[in-house]
Length: 545
Image (cartoon, rainbow, N blue to C red; front, side, top):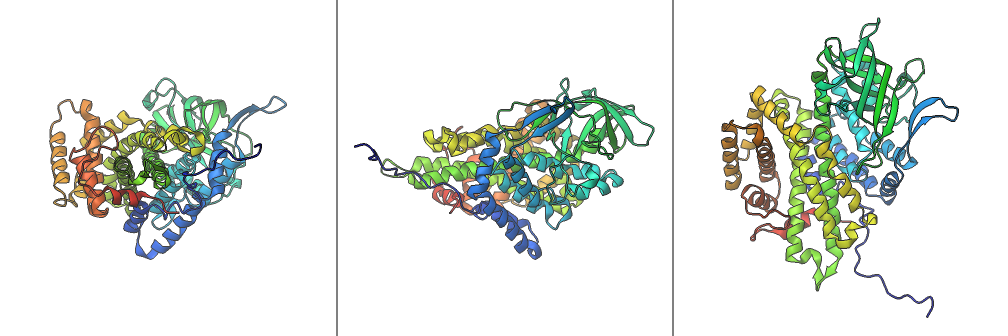
């Protein structure tokens, strides 16, 4: 009869919504507790739980959907033909970015345990919508570069670390909060920034220049300021390019087009031209790469954090689905083969979380040993964790079957986003070569990494054997560049194994060492060996509503 229902909807999981993204992530909570001073731990947990509840709310998740369904648009001219070069965003983008700034995701440099709490927040916030994390990352990472010039740092740092999001384009001196972008690469050079052709001509006022040239990738073109590289008389140099000049006029910042990207749709990435663009030098002439390198290191850690966040959300969605979905006479989560897949994914996610939070804690420590550790561990972690993100996202989508291929599930957005962090801020080969550079020029970096790894010596025979294999790799320098990826992969895995053996539950550490270090595993996810407590690994990864 007309109007009668043809079926009743059953055997579908409830939406993964209305929960605390932070508190539901056991590996992340434990890492925060492990690395945070007890005196501020309660405050840090409360702060992250507030962000976690917002991240898990239906409203904020809908903002993420809207920001991606309505990507930014470039408006080069106003109705009268005047050049304006503005990027227009959906209101959801501004709501997301305002919450991210308000949560302190650009303010790591000024608070107790600032990097640790910001890293955990960044990992949580990425799970809502990764695109708005780009300007948050650039703004956070600009601070150490600006500190090479105390006057510039005094002027800009309070704005960059502010918790106030001010979206209007006006002189920075009249704003209580500001965002930064970055422009390094050009058409002809890409990662080889010393091949840049943008010219910087000195003006009469000390430290000021005009720029002529272009940037092939300019991150966050709606920002208040940008750190860019250009050729000054004495070589490649770092410059600060404000979007609006002190007198209120727009700087020459010609946005040619926005990139049409695979993922990261909500975020604007632009091609820009400089034609008599006013700029202020940051650091010394000819030392631009050295000046901007601390910014690059911070953004590389954010790439690893972002991938860890994407992996966590993919695993959470897969485990949640399988905990409710029934097939072939039982819950999917209880089926041995699906449990193997979910546990394998969970191991990848937890290892990424453990390593990235350890790196953030090293930033907070700030000692010489920890700085040396970061020099080698950051590019290694960036290389490996970002490489693992795409296969994790794709496998997690498969756990949902056809549902995972449908936009409404959220998994396709994770899949499209998953390769990004491996490409940005130096792709895989750049990271591997950077590790080689650190090994050759900074022996203290290797010593610091080996000291960290050595804290787990004797705790697991597979880890000990993997460390010996790493020593063998390091001892053979013939053709080392061609083997750089192999070396960096081993270094990252040993670092992860050391952390899990010391800090994770035995069932997690055992499964990781058996599969990632002991070699008892196939090429695909879901090929973990028998005899492991996979049910406990999966249950640990399950987000409880």
